[in-house]
Structures are given as C-alpha cells and as structure tokens.
Image (tube, rainbow, N blue to C red; front, side, top):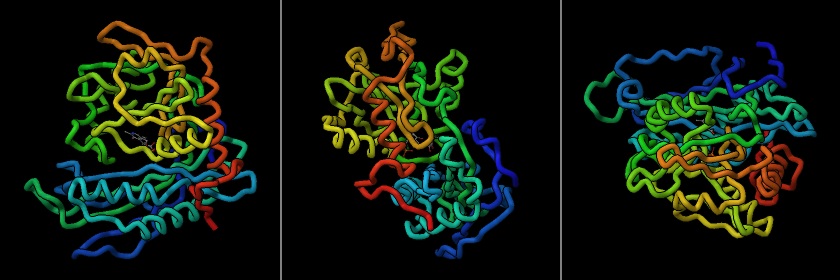
Length: 339
Ligand code: PLP
Ligand code: COI
C-alpha cells in the first residue's frame, strides 16, 4: 500500500498493510497473528453484533525529529481495555499481550507512521469482540482481539483552532450506573444521533450533561472537558464519563506548569467563569472550545473572542505534543520507544 499525502490527512480510514489478531477459545488466548486481510469472518449470531459485547481502544504512534517511533502511555490503554472487558463480561486481554500486539502492528506498518514535520500520527485501534453462535442474552465463550492502524490528521477538522460545541438536554450518552466509564460501542451508538444533529447545526461536538440531574458537565462527544480559570485546571468528576488518558496526563502537566488541578462536579452555569475551555482525548489531543451554546436555555458561553486558542491551552498543547513527539523531556516515563 502506498503512503498518503501526509498534509491532507483527516481523521479517516486510510488502508495500511497489516493488522494483528488473536483468538480466545476453550478458555485461553492463542498466539498473535499478523494478517493482511481487512475483513473478519465471524458467526452471524456473535454477541458483538447483537448485544454490543465489544470494546475498543484508541492510541497513537508518533515519529520524532530523531526518526524514532513513540507510543504514548500504551499500558494505560491496555488496562482500560481490561476494565472494559470486565464491565461487559468479556475475556480480559492480558496487558503484556496487548503491548506486544501494539508494537507488532506498528512495526509491521512502520512506513505509515507519518513524518515528524507533518504533525500527523498513526492511530492505533485495538478491538475486543464477543464471537461464536449465541442467541440468549449472555456473555460469549469465544472472543477475538484485533488491532489495526491508520495514519490520521486532526479529529476536529480545524485542528487546534477553537470550534463551537452545543448543550442539548434531549439526549444522554451514558447513564450514571451504566457503561459510560468503559469504552464500549453502545456509548458511541447512543451519541450518534445527538452528534449528527449538532454537526448539522454547525457544532463540532455535543457537550453532554450528567444524565440524572442535567446540572453538571459530563464530556464532549468523544473527548473529556476541561475549563481553566484562576490558574486552575478544572475537569468533571462524573460516574458516566470515560477516564481519559489524555486528561489524566494534562492534570499532571497542569501541575508541572504550576497550576492547581480540580476534578469535581462542574455546574453548567460555571461555564460563565472559565477563561479557557477545551476538549481532550487521543484523537482530539486538545481541541479548544470557541463557544458553548446551550440550545435549551438559549444561552452562549464564549471562550475565545479572537478565534484563537488561549495561552494556557496553547502551552498545555505544546507540552503534551512535545512529549509525544520527543521534543519535551518525558519526565514521567510516559513514552515507549519502538525499537
Ligand atoms: N471520552 C470519550 C467518550 C472518548 O471516546 C475518548 C477517547 O478515547 C476520550 C474521552 C478521551 O480518552 P483518551 O484521552 O484516553 O483517548
Ligand atoms: C480516541 O480519542 O481515541 C477515541 O476513541 C475517540 C473516537 C474516535 C471514538
């Protein structure tokens, strides 16, 4: 497969050469297999198809100025996939095997890791699915793990340029005691319709509120929310959001930059008081928020008057990207270099 035009990459699927697969049968995982087949052959009665018994992950590989390929905190993704597996009764994919599979798939597709100058990266998508014939609502006894890669540009089309987001109380992404804290397909299915409506209205994402009281901020579509004021990084504490690895890293970076960090409920009205706000995640990196329109209350909260990202979000973005690409010292040991 040939290389794409790196500068034109969006967050889309671009075919690469190999994926890695592994099967769970008779109570144990088999060997990792390198495959060139982009299709999978599974039984039509598989639990992943009918009952959403599937979980996925998302991480990236970055090529540094030195030409080396770096992974950012892959063991965190491995652990989160294990949490997701427990959450919906799937066989856990071992952390060490996950790391081995990720390294194997990146190495096999090495020439798809975009060059340093492009600012693009290689998105890595591990997937765990329940397979085998099953009709009753119960966990499968067979599973498939697979991981593919695709080179990507920015998730929100404007990259680091602030975009507007919308609050819409008519939709929830996940319930407080539901599956919001794990990365399972059903959460994303629930977000498709509100996401589509928001896009149609010109917003880059929905800023979901807590499903129970509709009082507090939850998360921004496929990314966590943060706000900044008084030299403090503030991010929601909620039982229905995904524990973002990017957000956890930004909390540390904020501390390293001499800021205070608060993880707590954030009432909607507090948006009024933030100097800067953003969405963060592997795909989103930091996507600054231009404005939040509360479509039910007919109210707008503006975070950027000149259409540019604020100084603190910019500094945090540069630090995070700097660590990921090897330009800023990795003092917390977050980076794994692929040899
Ligand atoms: N929230 C949701 C719903 C997501 O899908 C993601 C993406 O993985 C995130 C937050 C960000 O998490 P992370 O920083 O681990 O990619
Ligand atoms: C990620 O940031 O890795 C995500 O999973 C977001 C999205 C594309 C689902």
